[in-house]
Length: 274
Image (cartoon, rainbow, N blue to C red; front, side, top):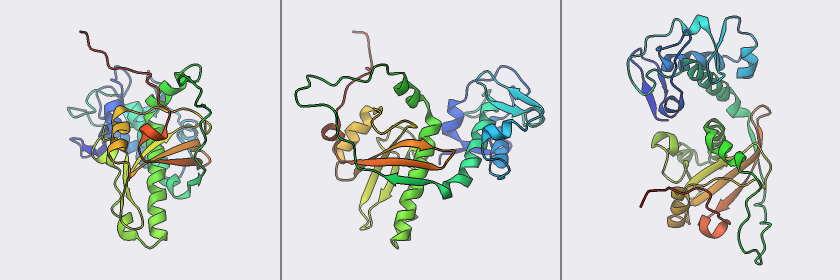
């Protein structure tokens, strides 16, 4: 994972720091979000609470930021002063929450169960003139913005890939699995570099939703183009009915060129004045 070290020696993921909003008030104002992330992670991974919401019920001196993230004053006011880096002047409440949830996740990964399902058949017919999106696209915007849910899905897929290779006596390949979107950054066209049992590369893109199997999902041009150029190695894992509280989820796999495997409809354009 692409991490950043603060001047106090704390470590947190750059991708999470970038998404924090700027802090303008509270005990954590202008204090170090990386340190806040670490404090949250330590508490989240302590196994004393099953979730962040469960922990929030136990806080006596809670503070809430403008985004609704809760953290204890007793931790926020003793964080180091922040002087630079990606998290400079960012929200320590949100950083604490992110760290706590990742800490809880570390305990959950080993017990997650993903059930494989056949790819659903399209409801469109050859007589259809064009693809007609579901009424209302708010759910698409919501899922695009919900990077935390996407990260959880990716981590669970990585665990499944590792377990599969190890169970088939390919621990050497399991050790080579890479969380590419975190190590190398977004925009690659895939999230995870994994392997077939024979050593062939797998480029895996993960799309996660809490909704049912037929819910449409969002793809970037990079992802579609990468699948076309790497159709032999490209696999899209579509996670659905994803419940992080019960540690269960379902998924199906689409292999190859997404141009030919999916019905695609443009819903967003990059616009430049003529």
